[in-house]
Length: 194
Length: 282
Image (cartoon, rainbow over all chains, first blue to last red; front, side):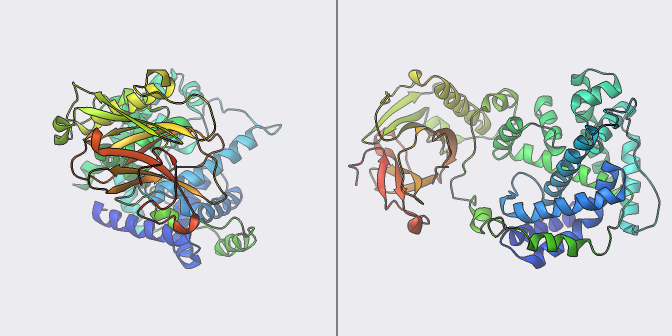
């Protein structure tokens, strides 16, 4: 995907959020249409089952409705803002779940595995396959330690200290790996788009 | 780019900064196009990673359930009014929490160069003490000013931070007690940016808002520098910026705060009573 359509989409989404912020239900529905698959997929990845993910996706979209007017386009893109709302919702849920009796506080080896499932169910076939292919190539260029740290930072509720424990590294090293992992991913993706 | 700032950018995009770090980073982000570009690229990478997950369609009836929940929300919790989104547009003062900028200041030291030619003409920062009767201006020489926009901002923010922590170091004396409000402002005429520190907000009528203004006493032109946030503590340190306006010399500038009625809050010139600053200037 070239940067131009991505920027054009982001501009449209800024407008949709602004309209949602003043109570425009149709703009909200359009946002839902744009984000539902990606956010639901992320929620499933974070909490591990579709039932809870449905509940959390509902919670997140109600928060998007209620907070749309406070969105500031200078601070983040609309999609990142929506992802942040969903991730926080899921992480709150996971941390509460973790504290319930009988649940495990922290997996002994909670290394996240990148998900490259090729299931066709509900897939946005072409674009997503292209994205996946680009990402596979980009991720392959990232050193494994950085990749693991980045995946845990993105797809788990763990704090930096917990990620450090999982990876048996100091927190500073883990932060550095997360930084390098994301920067390398950005560079690899940019290179592959050329 | 400074690795520390890069790390902050990554952690910001991954939502892994705490509230204070996030506020400081955002204050920095608003003034640094290079940093904003990096954040944008990191957001693209993040979005691509999420799109590359196994894409799952939520149940068909989910939107209807969400809308039913929205319909049940109390009437007092709808989206905020429309004006808020546009309230930070170009030419209007941008307010932000400036406290704790020291963290940002530390990591911004190696930022890229953006030139501010006007620095050579204005090797000073204006400091004004404000209380309910008067304003007291002083010029603080800045002999070793950089022409780098970020360095200027860092210098100003550092100064604001220092005076906030040690108001006794201010070159203008503030009333220490008494009724009414008090505060001070720092203004850099080279970059048209500044900080206003409110130590005590004046009492206000319900619905009133405090507008901060800069007056060119030679031309009579006023520039609105923003609306002071009302907080429970009645104090705070805030960043502002104004549109450039001709020559700026301490003898030709004055600063004041007015209490404006809600019906005139969209005004582009002061109409209400001066509550901080020289109340005889009009």
